[in-house]
Length: 291
Image (cartoon, rainbow, N blue to C red):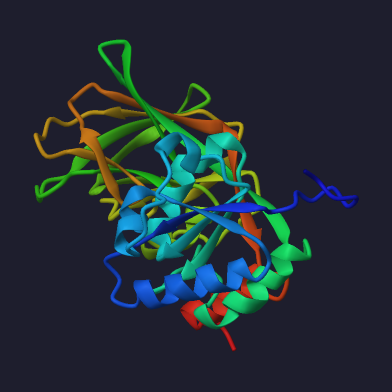
Protein backbone atom coordinates (compact mmCIF):
# COMPACT_ATOMS: atom_id res chain seq x y z
CA UNK A 1 0.00 0.00 0.00
CA UNK A 2 1.31 3.46 -0.91
CA UNK A 3 0.16 6.72 0.56
CA UNK A 4 -0.74 9.83 -1.40
CA UNK A 5 2.92 10.88 -1.50
CA UNK A 6 3.92 7.63 -3.17
CA UNK A 7 5.78 6.20 -0.15
CA UNK A 8 4.98 2.68 0.88
CA UNK A 9 3.26 2.31 4.23
CA UNK A 10 5.50 0.12 6.38
CA UNK A 11 3.39 -2.51 8.13
CA UNK A 12 5.80 -5.38 8.63
CA UNK A 13 9.57 -5.47 8.98
CA UNK A 14 11.96 -8.38 8.40
CA UNK A 15 14.46 -8.26 11.24
CA UNK A 16 18.02 -9.51 10.79
CA UNK A 17 20.20 -9.43 13.93
CA UNK A 18 23.84 -10.17 14.68
CA UNK A 19 23.19 -12.28 17.76
CA UNK A 20 26.89 -12.54 18.59
CA UNK A 21 26.92 -8.92 19.78
CA UNK A 22 26.71 -8.81 23.62
CA UNK A 23 24.25 -5.91 23.58
CA UNK A 24 22.05 -7.39 20.82
CA UNK A 25 19.33 -8.79 23.08
CA UNK A 26 18.67 -5.55 24.96
CA UNK A 27 18.67 -3.42 21.81
CA UNK A 28 16.48 -5.94 20.02
CA UNK A 29 13.87 -5.65 22.80
CA UNK A 30 13.89 -1.85 22.42
CA UNK A 31 13.35 -2.22 18.66
CA UNK A 32 10.39 -4.56 19.18
CA UNK A 33 8.83 -2.30 21.83
CA UNK A 34 9.23 0.91 19.82
CA UNK A 35 7.94 -0.68 16.62
CA UNK A 36 4.91 -2.09 18.43
CA UNK A 37 3.87 1.46 19.40
CA UNK A 38 3.11 2.09 15.72
CA UNK A 39 1.46 -1.26 14.99
CA UNK A 40 4.46 -2.68 13.13
CA UNK A 41 4.69 -6.45 12.88
CA UNK A 42 8.17 -7.96 12.94
CA UNK A 43 9.13 -11.01 10.91
CA UNK A 44 11.69 -12.99 12.89
CA UNK A 45 13.69 -15.87 11.50
CA UNK A 46 13.75 -19.01 13.62
CA UNK A 47 17.18 -18.25 15.10
CA UNK A 48 16.10 -14.82 16.31
CA UNK A 49 12.76 -16.10 17.63
CA UNK A 50 14.53 -18.84 19.60
CA UNK A 51 16.99 -16.28 20.93
CA UNK A 52 14.07 -14.25 22.33
CA UNK A 53 12.29 -17.33 23.68
CA UNK A 54 9.49 -17.00 21.15
CA UNK A 55 7.85 -19.67 19.01
CA UNK A 56 6.64 -17.49 16.14
CA UNK A 57 9.69 -17.56 13.86
CA UNK A 58 8.58 -17.37 10.21
CA UNK A 59 9.65 -19.54 7.31
CA UNK A 60 12.47 -18.36 5.03
CA UNK A 61 9.92 -17.61 2.30
CA UNK A 62 7.77 -15.46 4.58
CA UNK A 63 10.82 -13.75 6.08
CA UNK A 64 11.48 -12.17 2.68
CA UNK A 65 8.01 -10.59 2.50
CA UNK A 66 8.63 -7.59 4.73
CA UNK A 67 7.91 -4.05 3.56
CA UNK A 68 11.32 -3.17 4.98
CA UNK A 69 14.40 -5.11 6.09
CA UNK A 70 16.06 -3.93 9.30
CA UNK A 71 19.65 -5.01 10.02
CA UNK A 72 20.73 -4.78 13.64
CA UNK A 73 24.50 -5.06 13.87
CA UNK A 74 27.46 -3.81 11.86
CA UNK A 75 28.13 -3.42 8.17
CA UNK A 76 28.61 -7.18 7.83
CA UNK A 77 25.05 -7.76 9.03
CA UNK A 78 23.81 -5.07 6.67
CA UNK A 79 25.60 -6.65 3.70
CA UNK A 80 24.07 -10.02 4.61
CA UNK A 81 20.62 -8.41 4.61
CA UNK A 82 21.32 -6.78 1.26
CA UNK A 83 22.17 -10.18 -0.21
CA UNK A 84 18.77 -11.49 0.85
CA UNK A 85 16.56 -8.55 -0.13
CA UNK A 86 18.06 -6.46 -2.94
CA UNK A 87 16.49 -8.52 -5.75
CA UNK A 88 13.08 -8.09 -4.15
CA UNK A 89 13.19 -4.28 -4.28
CA UNK A 90 12.81 -4.12 -0.50
CA UNK A 91 14.53 -1.13 1.18
CA UNK A 92 17.10 -1.73 3.90
CA UNK A 93 17.71 0.10 7.15
CA UNK A 94 20.60 -0.42 9.56
CA UNK A 95 20.88 0.19 13.32
CA UNK A 96 24.49 0.22 14.39
CA UNK A 97 26.00 -2.08 17.03
CA UNK A 98 29.75 -2.50 17.44
CA UNK A 99 32.68 -1.03 15.51
CA UNK A 100 32.86 1.51 12.69
CA UNK A 101 29.54 0.89 10.96
CA UNK A 102 29.25 2.98 7.80
CA UNK A 103 26.13 1.45 6.26
CA UNK A 104 24.28 0.97 9.56
CA UNK A 105 23.96 4.70 10.08
CA UNK A 106 21.14 4.86 12.66
CA UNK A 107 22.31 5.00 16.27
CA UNK A 108 20.76 3.06 19.14
CA UNK A 109 19.62 6.36 20.68
CA UNK A 110 17.64 7.12 17.52
CA UNK A 111 15.45 4.00 17.55
CA UNK A 112 12.37 5.78 18.89
CA UNK A 113 12.46 8.71 16.46
CA UNK A 114 13.38 6.32 13.64
CA UNK A 115 10.13 4.36 14.05
CA UNK A 116 8.15 7.58 14.39
CA UNK A 117 9.61 8.77 11.07
CA UNK A 118 8.84 5.43 9.42
CA UNK A 119 5.23 5.54 10.67
CA UNK A 120 4.86 9.08 9.32
CA UNK A 121 6.67 8.26 6.05
CA UNK A 122 9.30 10.83 6.97
CA UNK A 123 12.28 9.08 5.43
CA UNK A 124 14.13 8.94 2.15
CA UNK A 125 15.22 6.00 0.03
CA UNK A 126 18.58 6.13 -1.72
CA UNK A 127 19.41 3.82 -4.62
CA UNK A 128 22.89 2.29 -4.54
CA UNK A 129 24.74 0.63 -7.38
CA UNK A 130 25.29 -3.13 -7.21
CA UNK A 131 27.90 -4.89 -9.34
CA UNK A 132 28.25 -8.56 -10.19
CA UNK A 133 31.30 -10.68 -10.87
CA UNK A 134 31.15 -13.58 -13.33
CA UNK A 135 33.94 -16.13 -13.04
CA UNK A 136 34.75 -17.63 -16.44
CA UNK A 137 36.84 -20.82 -16.55
CA UNK A 138 37.64 -22.56 -19.82
CA UNK A 139 35.07 -20.35 -21.58
CA UNK A 140 32.30 -21.36 -19.19
CA UNK A 141 30.72 -19.16 -16.50
CA UNK A 142 31.07 -21.15 -13.26
CA UNK A 143 29.71 -18.56 -10.83
CA UNK A 144 28.01 -15.14 -10.77
CA UNK A 145 28.21 -13.24 -7.47
CA UNK A 146 26.69 -9.83 -6.60
CA UNK A 147 28.79 -7.27 -4.70
CA UNK A 148 27.58 -4.23 -2.79
CA UNK A 149 30.99 -2.93 -1.67
CA UNK A 150 33.73 -4.55 -3.71
CA UNK A 151 35.11 -7.45 -5.69
CA UNK A 152 38.69 -8.29 -4.68
CA UNK A 153 41.22 -10.53 -6.38
CA UNK A 154 44.15 -11.25 -4.07
CA UNK A 155 47.02 -13.66 -3.70
CA UNK A 156 46.25 -15.18 -0.33
CA UNK A 157 49.26 -16.06 1.80
CA UNK A 158 51.90 -15.94 -0.93
CA UNK A 159 54.52 -13.18 -0.96
CA UNK A 160 55.17 -13.21 -4.70
CA UNK A 161 53.40 -10.83 -7.08
CA UNK A 162 50.40 -11.78 -9.17
CA UNK A 163 49.72 -10.64 -12.72
CA UNK A 164 46.30 -9.33 -13.69
CA UNK A 165 45.70 -8.50 -17.35
CA UNK A 166 42.86 -5.99 -17.43
CA UNK A 167 40.39 -4.65 -19.99
CA UNK A 168 37.58 -2.07 -19.98
CA UNK A 169 34.88 -2.65 -22.62
CA UNK A 170 37.33 -4.85 -24.50
CA UNK A 171 40.06 -2.19 -24.52
CA UNK A 172 43.32 -3.29 -22.98
CA UNK A 173 44.32 -1.21 -19.92
CA UNK A 174 47.46 -3.02 -18.89
CA UNK A 175 48.86 -5.94 -16.95
CA UNK A 176 49.15 -5.01 -13.29
CA UNK A 177 51.60 -6.65 -10.93
CA UNK A 178 51.09 -6.48 -7.19
CA UNK A 179 49.11 -8.07 -4.37
CA UNK A 180 45.79 -7.88 -6.17
CA UNK A 181 42.99 -5.66 -7.43
CA UNK A 182 39.84 -4.10 -6.00
CA UNK A 183 36.79 -3.25 -8.10
CA UNK A 184 34.47 -1.19 -5.90
CA UNK A 185 31.08 0.49 -6.01
CA UNK A 186 30.65 4.05 -4.73
CA UNK A 187 29.24 2.49 -1.54
CA UNK A 188 32.46 0.48 -1.22
CA UNK A 189 34.68 3.49 -1.89
CA UNK A 190 34.91 4.09 1.87
CA UNK A 191 35.93 0.47 2.55
CA UNK A 192 38.88 -1.61 1.39
CA UNK A 193 39.45 0.62 -1.64
CA UNK A 194 39.92 3.66 0.60
CA UNK A 195 42.52 1.74 2.64
CA UNK A 196 44.36 1.12 -0.62
CA UNK A 197 44.46 4.90 -1.32
CA UNK A 198 41.35 4.90 -3.49
CA UNK A 199 39.06 7.93 -3.92
CA UNK A 200 35.98 8.72 -1.83
CA UNK A 201 33.01 8.63 -4.22
CA UNK A 202 29.59 10.03 -3.34
CA UNK A 203 27.34 6.92 -3.05
CA UNK A 204 24.62 7.98 -5.49
CA UNK A 205 27.03 8.22 -8.43
CA UNK A 206 26.92 5.65 -11.23
CA UNK A 207 30.58 4.78 -11.33
CA UNK A 208 32.94 1.87 -10.64
CA UNK A 209 36.38 2.19 -9.05
CA UNK A 210 39.31 0.05 -10.22
CA UNK A 211 42.11 0.04 -7.67
CA UNK A 212 45.27 -2.04 -7.30
CA UNK A 213 46.60 -3.46 -4.03
CA UNK A 214 50.28 -2.65 -3.42
CA UNK A 215 51.16 -2.26 -7.13
CA UNK A 216 54.78 -2.91 -8.13
CA UNK A 217 54.85 0.32 -10.16
CA UNK A 218 54.83 3.79 -8.63
CA UNK A 219 52.78 5.33 -11.45
CA UNK A 220 49.72 3.10 -11.01
CA UNK A 221 46.69 5.00 -9.69
CA UNK A 222 42.98 4.17 -9.22
CA UNK A 223 40.66 4.51 -12.22
CA UNK A 224 37.01 5.60 -12.01
CA UNK A 225 34.84 4.46 -14.94
CA UNK A 226 31.12 4.72 -15.80
CA UNK A 227 28.94 2.01 -14.29
CA UNK A 228 27.99 0.91 -17.82
CA UNK A 229 31.55 -0.38 -18.28
CA UNK A 230 32.42 -4.06 -18.42
CA UNK A 231 35.69 -4.82 -16.64
CA UNK A 232 37.52 -8.03 -17.52
CA UNK A 233 40.45 -9.25 -15.44
CA UNK A 234 42.50 -12.21 -16.65
CA UNK A 235 44.51 -14.20 -14.13
CA UNK A 236 48.11 -14.56 -15.31
CA UNK A 237 49.60 -16.36 -12.30
CA UNK A 238 49.16 -19.83 -10.81
CA UNK A 239 48.83 -19.86 -6.99
CA UNK A 240 46.70 -22.35 -5.13
CA UNK A 241 45.70 -19.67 -2.58
CA UNK A 242 44.63 -16.99 -5.07
CA UNK A 243 41.14 -15.95 -4.06
CA UNK A 244 38.16 -13.95 -5.28
CA UNK A 245 36.54 -12.21 -2.29
CA UNK A 246 33.19 -10.44 -2.35
CA UNK A 247 32.34 -7.83 0.30
CA UNK A 248 34.92 -9.20 2.70
CA UNK A 249 33.82 -12.83 2.36
CA UNK A 250 35.68 -15.49 0.41
CA UNK A 251 34.06 -16.28 -2.93
CA UNK A 252 36.18 -19.00 -4.49
CA UNK A 253 39.72 -19.99 -5.39
CA UNK A 254 41.02 -18.81 -8.76
CA UNK A 255 43.20 -20.55 -11.30
CA UNK A 256 45.57 -19.33 -13.96
CA UNK A 257 43.70 -18.23 -17.11
CA UNK A 258 40.43 -17.66 -15.22
CA UNK A 259 38.64 -14.47 -16.25
CA UNK A 260 36.64 -12.27 -13.86
CA UNK A 261 34.07 -10.18 -15.72
CA UNK A 262 32.54 -7.39 -13.63
CA UNK A 263 29.59 -5.24 -14.61
CA UNK A 264 26.64 -3.31 -13.20
CA UNK A 265 23.79 -5.44 -11.87
CA UNK A 266 20.27 -4.83 -13.11
CA UNK A 267 19.23 -4.63 -9.44
CA UNK A 268 19.78 -1.76 -7.02
CA UNK A 269 20.31 -1.77 -3.27
CA UNK A 270 17.73 0.53 -1.68
CA UNK A 271 18.75 2.20 1.59
CA UNK A 272 16.53 4.06 4.00
CA UNK A 273 18.44 7.15 5.06
CA UNK A 274 18.10 9.38 8.06
CA UNK A 275 16.51 12.74 7.14
CA UNK A 276 18.91 14.42 9.59
CA UNK A 277 22.21 12.99 8.34
CA UNK A 278 23.96 13.13 4.96
CA UNK A 279 27.00 11.38 3.50
CA UNK A 280 29.42 14.08 4.59
CA UNK A 281 28.03 14.07 8.13
CA UNK A 282 28.85 10.35 8.26
CA UNK A 283 32.36 10.93 6.87
CA UNK A 284 33.08 13.45 9.59
CA UNK A 285 31.56 11.30 12.32
CA UNK A 286 33.02 7.91 11.39
CA UNK A 287 36.40 8.89 9.94
CA UNK A 288 37.02 12.24 11.66
CA UNK A 289 37.57 13.34 8.05
CA UNK A 290 37.51 17.13 8.56
CA UNK A 291 36.10 19.35 11.28
